Picture 1 (cartoon, helix red, strand yellow):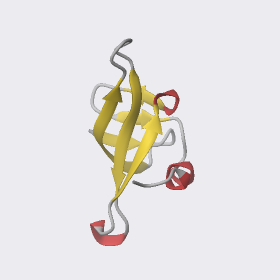
Picture 2 (cartoon, helix red, strand yellow):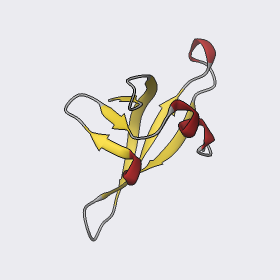
Picture 3 (tube, one colour):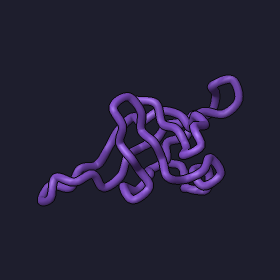
Picture 4 (cartoon, helix red, strand yellow):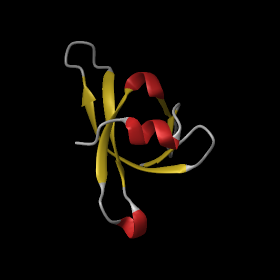
Length: 73
């Protein structure tokens, strides 16, 4: 699923999610973003508080720069 910032800028794609066993709620979603020419893919866990789920897109309530500040795994 594509991931975009609140301003519509593409941030990458959602590739995984952690669901809490007891509550069934999303804890975080892993967003894969790549560098220049699709190289150096980085996986970043985005907390549920920064996510708005849509039908065809994962809208993040953070900017591209804020996503980059999340430590890549």
